Image (cartoon, rainbow, N blue to C red; front, side, top):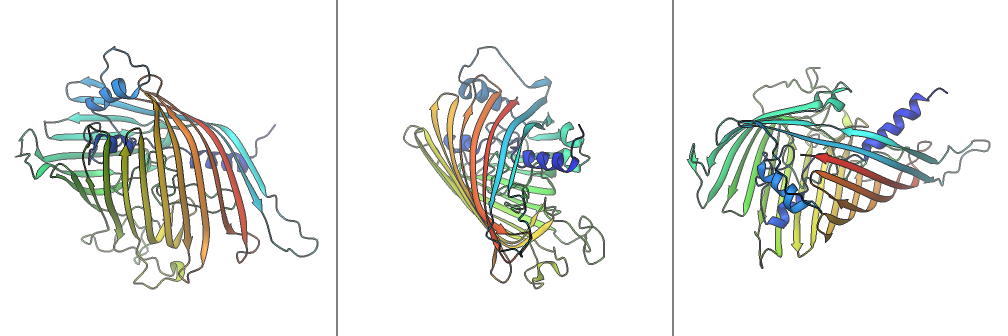
Length: 444
């Protein structure tokens, strides 16, 4: 039997839209009262390759049934390797309630889409080199993503901690505990790095069944080229500033060249600012909290005629307020995003205005087993004030780490919203999406 290539492609898109990034769980830093993620990761902003501290955390504090066998990701003096392999089985359905009054004899389109299947989502392989006590290099290669012939199959950078406890350049102090500069291709610092990219404050979901894309441009394996400056201040604050090429959009500049080539090579392309203040561990480590904000601004993006916006608005701007609270076995993370002229990677279009919200509550049921309840909401609109896509979703699931370096994640999601009807964009349709999935994650 021949396989329908269009249906197969749609199923793959649906599966990809619910895959998770290989990020750290941001609640770990919150529970430890840490403003940054240097305790477990090479990158102070979190994610990717782990340090020896990350190995010890996974072996001793994360697994339900820890073992005493030693393990290290070191493969040579100063050289480490890491892996994040994720696979997933998913069932998805989207039911549309149509209120259109079509002409006599015209049939309504099929309003229900179903898909299921298994998918090897990602297999990033990490390498890091400790060039000196305060100088490190990192590279990631993903052979699964590379099979799709994309530049996002790799990333890499060098990082120099010019203020460091080793005193190699400058000695850490009470005011500045760490300061670094990072140069290369990397994921910019912005908001909360929820490890599930399908959250609407991250990359969101694909354009499924005509519902329309919901989410920002932080898609899986997103990276940008540039430089990042970061500093830990007073042991409770962490600030970063990124100057970037600006890869969230696509299109052509006024010279007719692709966007990666700028008209003025000396002009900043985009910048990202992020700051977080953490209380540190309180009441014998039972309580901790943090609050922060982020800003992303693309300074010269202006595609003539896009969205009908005036030149003064045709620049991507995205702001966020984010924070968290940890009390006993409960952790809450929340982020609110707002912006204009936001690019949708999958659909290839822009939204004039965007608002996104994500609130995640996690409860430690026992060692190695955590319950997750999440609510996220997304809406975008046109410059004239009319809304084009509204969507809310509730997720219930578990994160189970039975043994070290192994995670199982079952989740059930229900999303509801409205979107323009393909037959008549001036009319809206109600959508109800139901998703059940089981994800397997092997990492070290």
